[in-house]
Image (cartoon, rainbow, N blue to C red; front, side, top):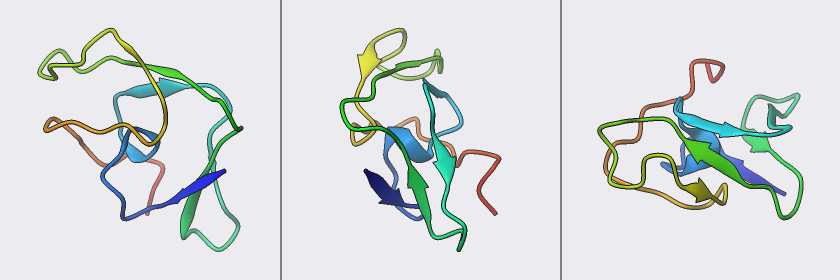
Length: 68
């Protein structure tokens, strides 16, 4: 499964602590395993400390530092 690096979703957020996410070789997508879940660590988010899927989103998104 994957999301474009331009998508403002948990998979591309600095504060999403999901397991096994990585960036595609061409740098255009963030990849993750089907059924993946992660925890939001942004205390400014209304979804903080919740278990979220990679395609979830909120208003406190910040681009993951690994994305160039």
